[in-house]
Length: 456
Image (cartoon, rainbow, N blue to C red; front, top):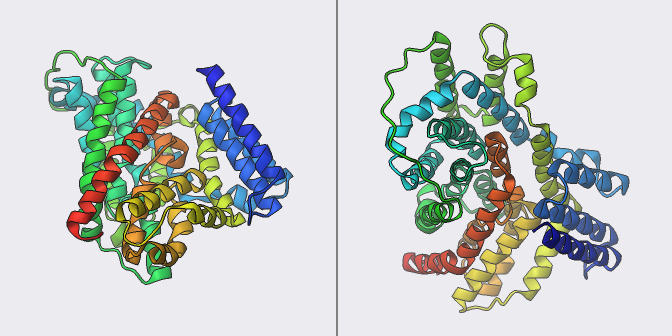
């Protein structure tokens, strides 16, 4: 496997060198250099030949030494709310684990989910879908679910690195992120799409229309696919059902932590009412959890909980989209791809697949939140080329940016796996297969659903 990755990276390196020396038509030399650096970075992340944090540092250094981006753009990930939500997540996870609350909750859920491994995975994925309706942040959902899921895995006897524990980790990572793409306020890219459509095109995307159009196939269908893939890729036996646990008569501190988490969850779920960013809510909770006497995480515990390699990787993934956007490369590439797409009025199926594929390919370079920023301004031209309504063209972006090929495209996936302490390579197998099945099966089904609703 490693030898194959080395060959693949050598090919990527060769392509990057050609793109840097002979930029594509319409691409400036600086944009060509940025494209080459981005391609090499994606190759390192995808093949895993170097540690992700080291690949990220190489990415930063190459851009800064080459004068290809400003420090503000390169380090944009560190000022992102998502980065601080990740940091808060590590503190919250440490508090839940260290207090024994995660194990306790896991043990309480075990009788219901431990009847079979299928019930366990399906239950966790179902919980992710439910939380997608209640919590507006996929990061927040991951932070709630990972300690709970890992406590459940521990209660069921799944050791670190076992198929069962990896399956639980992957189920939580994917379920806290993928279904949310089909629910308007649940994920950041959805909200970027809503804002860009309103600001640039005067389109107001309605909650109900968005849900009816996307959730049956991209939300529910993809969740069912996820359950099937995990059961096939990471087979395990949950063993006998565990008995129900008696009511918790534990310490008052555990009750205090439960109250804090409930208050935080309520604030996350109602962020549209009070307007406070979920990241700042999480940071406030982290401050409380770190406070002497009333908190749950000590100084040494904080240092142990922080995975700075994961934080660097998340910063790099967030910065990649910012660099591509700031350089103008995203729009240039989208226009180049647009010229080669088989778009024609009356060819609804090929137009739908091509536009969805355009969103998926754009996400490889800009990451998920960058897709609406790059493609929404092109919607009128795409509508003219296809004969579709501008609103239908805009909505095809959802089919594109919800197709996650590699974990780096969606920071919550990286965070969830980092919190679970399970290998990222396991998640890559699932994202690749999910993307392949989506393109081959779910997108054609989605086309039929759109046609049934009268969108095409």
